[in-house]
Amino acid sequence: MSNSPTNHAKLNAWVKEIADLVEPANIYWADGSKAEYDQMIKILVDAGLATPLKKRPNSFLFRSDPSDVARAESRTFIASQNKDDAGPYNNWINPAELKEKMRAVYKGCMKGRTMYVIPFSMGPIGSPIAKIGVEISDSPYVVVNMQIMTRVGTKVLEVLGTDGEFIPCLHSVGKPLAEGQTDGGKWPCEPDVEKKYISHFPEERTIWSFGSGYGGNALLGKKCLALRIASIAARDEGWLAEHMLILKMTREADNKFKYIAAAFPSACGKTNLAMLIPTIPGWKVECIGDDIAWMKIRDGKLYAINPEAGFFGVGPGTSMHSNPNAMLSIKENTIFSNAALTEDGDIWWEGIGYDAPGKLIDWKGREWIQDKNNKDQEPSAHANARFTVPARQCPVIAPEWEDPNGVPIDAILFGGRRASVIPLIHQAKSWNHGVFIGSIAGSEITGAALDLKVGSVRRDPMAMVPFCGYHMGDYLKHWVEVGKNISEENQPKFFFVNWFRKKDGKFMWPGFGENSRVLKWVFEQCDGSGKAVDTPIGLMPEPSSIDRPSDVSEETLKELLAVDIEGWKAEIKDVRENHYAKLEPKLPKELAAELDAIEKRLG
Ligand code: GTP
Ligand code: SPV
Ligand code: MN
Figure (cartoon, rainbow, N blue to C red):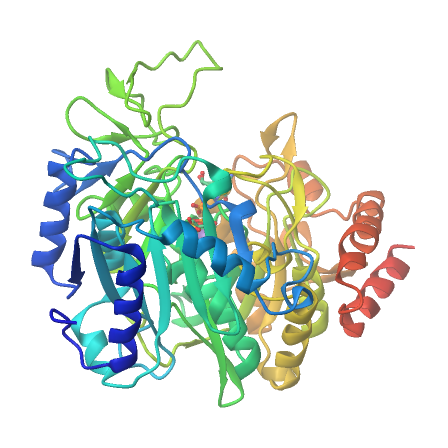
C-alpha cells in the first residue's frame, strides 16, 4: 500500500483487504500528533458536526443521531465457534454466518469517505502488559476520541515492528456517501438499531463494528478490546480484565495508602468514586483509572493497570458539588457528546449544579428553555451525554497512574444501584465469598445502553454482563482459580457497597465525597484496625464505626447497615432460581457452596 508508514506485512495485508471491501475514497494512517487532532477537528467543525465551545479552550460539542446515543447491547455479539462458549448472558451468532452478513453490509460502506487506520496501545506503549490494536474507521470523531482514550500513532507502529501482534478492529458508521454527497451537518450512522452490529470473534481475537458512531460501540479499544477480547486473553493467561476503577487512598497522619479497585455497572458511580474528594479530614484520594482495570499476579500479589489514557465520563449529575475533580478536568481539551449548548458557547446538563443560563440548544438541536415548574420537561442533555478528556488533566491523577508495573490491589469493591435490601456496605470473609458477592450483584438498569428497560433490576456479576467475552459460568470459575494462585495474606479483601438506597423516593445516603466515610472503613479493614461484626451476609461495620455525615440521622445509618433478612432471603431465592440456574452446568461448585451456606445462615 503506497501511503502505509509500516512494513508490517500482516497489517498492510489486512488494511488492503478491508479497503478492497469497503471501497473508501482515501486511506489515512493516524500518527497521533496534535496537528492531526487539530486537522480532524477542523474537518468535523467544517462539516457542521462539531461546535467549538467559546467557554472552554480547544473543546467541542457533538450531537449524535437520536438513534445512536449509547451502547447497543442487543446488537453486541460474541461469535465464538460454539454457542456454549458465549454463554447465557451474551448474544451469539455463528461466526461464519455473522461474517457473511457483515461482509454484505461492509461492501462499499466507506464510499466517499476517508478510511482512517488508527494504531493504538491499551496500556503504556511498549509495556509488557500493554496490548496493541489497530482500528480502521471511517469516522474522524473516532480518531479524535481514540487519541484521547488510548495511546495512538507512530510509536505504536514502532513497537509493532514488522511482525508484532495486533488486534484488528474494524469500524464503520455504515453511511456511504454518493458522488458529491456530504453528511449535511448530520451525525452519520445506521439509524436502524437492528442493522447495527458490535461483533467479537473470540478465537480470532477480532472486532467488527458497524452502524454506530457512539462511545463503546465505536471506540473499539475500550469495551470491545480492553474488556470483551481482553477477558478471553485473561482467562487463557491467568489474569483479570475487569470493569473497574482504580483509586489510591492515603491516610495523611502516617502516609499509609491502599489501592482499591471497584466494579459498578455502567452509570453507577465509578468515575465519581475514582476521583472523589473526601469529606473527612486527613484523607486523600487519587485516581489511577475510572473504568477498566487489568490485574495480574506478580510476586504473589494482584497488580492493576488502567489500560486507558482518558475518561469517557457521564455528564448529567456531574457538578462542582458531586465531582469537582471531573469538572476541573473538563475545563479544556474536551470533547462533549450530546450535552446541551448555551448561548455563550458552553455546555450544560441536568445536575450540573446551576440553572440553565438562558436559552439553550438541546442535544437534539432544538431551542430549550428551562421550566422548573414542569417536572416532565424533556431533559436538555441526553442521560448518556458524555465528556472525553485526557486522564492527565484530572487534578488528582496519581503520579503512578501510568506505571507499567501497575499498583498492588488491597481491596476490591463490587456494587450496584439498589433502592432496597442491599446495605451500604458488607464485607466477604474469604476470596470465594468475595467472588460470590460479586457474582450475585444486581443493579437497576441505567441509560448507558440504548436498548434495555431503565430501572429494572438485573443480575450483573462483577458489572461484566455486557463486557464478558465468554460464558459467565467459566468467567466466575476463572475468578475462583485466580484466588488459588494468591496466598491468603496477599489476597485483596472484598466488599459490596450500595450508595443508592432510597426511602420515600429519596436517596438515604448522600454519596459522592461522603463515600469516603465508607472507604475509610474499607481502609481500616485492610489495615487490621477496623471493627466489624459478623452477620449472615458477611462482615459489617457497627453503625458507630462509620463516621456519620451531618445530614444522615443515626436511625438512617442504622437502617443502611441493617441486614434485611426477609429481603435477603428473596434475593438469594432469585439468585438460585433465575441467575445461578442459568449458569448450569458451568456454575463453579465453590459458588454453589457459598449459595447454600448463605441460605443456611439466613435461616
Ligand atoms: P460508566 O462511565 O457508564 O461506566 O459510569 P460510571 O460507573 O463511571 O458512573 P458515574 O460515576 O459517571 O456516575 C453515573 C451517575 O451516577 C451520575 O449521574 C452520577 O451523578 C451518579 N452517582 C455517582 N456516584 C453517586 C453516589 O454516590 N450517589 C448518588 N446518588 N449518585 C451517584
Ligand atoms: C459504559 O457504558 O460502561 C461506558 C460507556 O463506560 S461506553 O464506552 O459507551 O461503553
Ligand atoms: Mn464504564
